[in-house]
Length: 546
Image 1 (cartoon, rainbow, N blue to C red):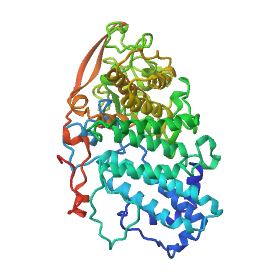
Image 2: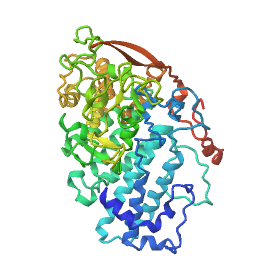
Image 3: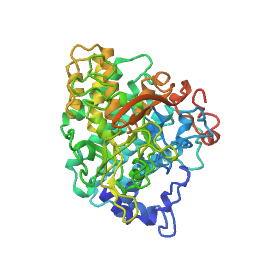
Image 4: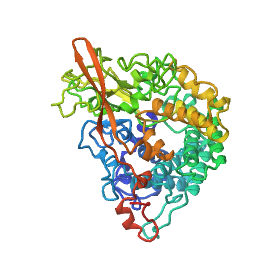
């Protein structure tokens, strides 16, 4: 996003104009430097800066609370080592319209308003050359679609906003139906895709990080996948699944993206070595810091906090490598006395288990090991630490810090392949393409192909588990389980860890319950914050159960 943020530096005179502290209905156009609104739209720099600033609504998800929480800790993927973390309101039934977490309601509408203002004013703006205007408007359409999607996936049916409002207008508006929300997102994605550069590889170096055609198509495909899923498609309308499949296949057919190799995969999120790589479709600004490592590395590593502790339920999802079978299969070859041997290579790429190397030395999560010290309040609660995203080149101890340039990847090609396989299986059953594209994701890490002859239900289970493994910690599981309507089955139960006892050189392994979790029907949707309900008492209405 080099060009976006270099423009922003030149656009600092508008910082207060776009302050996130403003309510989305108030939008001051003067700050002492710009005398009136026309000075924005008559200037090439200011008009470009306006849309560049709208990118700041894109969510970076590595640290939701400033203390290392990830949304994975609100699913069966992980536990937060800080047991008093606010992330736990998702897990212990203390969530409410007055006590929220990851509430994006006002924030997303703020940024939607900015995109609408740009779309209303950019056609007659001073952008030079004028031939750049359609592409800039395409970016605005993409961002407006993205921000509506962020609202939809949390709150369900929402108010669709396609124009800016003024404070004197009636803003107590009814929600649109979910189908209407989806239709608007798809329309905006199509408008964006029609004018944007095809993909990151086609962008000039200064434009990398801006929206592209494949980013718009990826958002469209994910939106249609959510719309086809049981939460939003209770009648099981197969045509909705087919639309989602077709949208994902359109990205595949463009042949602009590909999977990284197994060796490259750990650096997919590290833009110091794999910037704008072929698997990334769209990502946030790449922050340059070591906070992720400080928050999540094992506790013996320079005072790290070890926040994200993967659950045994997630570890169990990684198949046996040599056979390709789940560990629950008696013929898989899984050995509970040596549980991490011969497993899907992604286990070691994404999760730190006992005796695996991190920063050149083995991690010790056995009882009494240097990374399992119960008197340390940050000690792992499950016997595991997260490895995904982290760079072993980062340093945060005494001395000079070494930072890592890392974005939050919103869309990547592996997800597109799995989206296509899931939607196609639901629309047509386990046809050849379903196998082909799931197996591409597995083959990248030398996992055997799925067995032939799976039923539609069996294939569904395999695809859901493939998503659980491939996309772990990336914000998908929290929403996937909800859209599948499997919350009561998967989230309303305890999560487990592994207790490892060392006697000489011998290790014994025993599963144990870490904490209980609560999930009920109302939790499929976020509560509308009470402050927002108070602003629109006639029409907004609370989500069921809250």
